[in-house]
Image 1: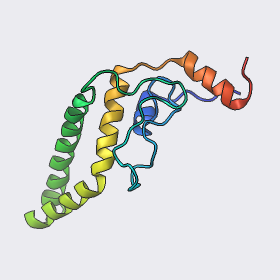
Image 2 (image 1 turned 30 degrees about the vertical axis):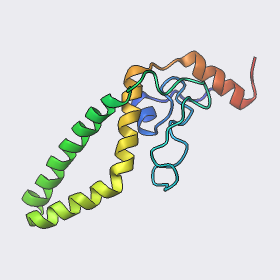
Image 3 (image 1 turned 90 degrees about the horizontal axis):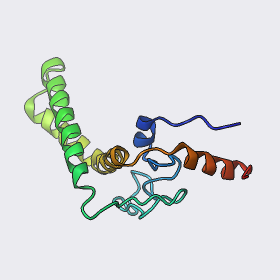
Length: 137
């Protein structure tokens, strides 16, 4: 029985390799204090390189800036307009959420950036799935 194909967004969200969509981009979990910013050099499953060129992840900074900028606008707007929080309380909550989600946003932005540049290869994914299920040809 073949595994269901993972979508682009699901692969980016789960921070898996864009080529095979099975290998992890990061060795540790997002909220682990051990190596929070460390990213392996290549996929442990298909050996896709994660660093395609020097400075490759500069583009991820723009992704995180866009995501976080819109989040801040909607978050602050919601607290101020709908929930009638004070500006001070709203900013304190925003800073708290920023501190908690900083590593996740760093990783998610990198995941989106590499998913934009590296295309999915169903042949590679199928080969990995057949090896893992024990039905290698």
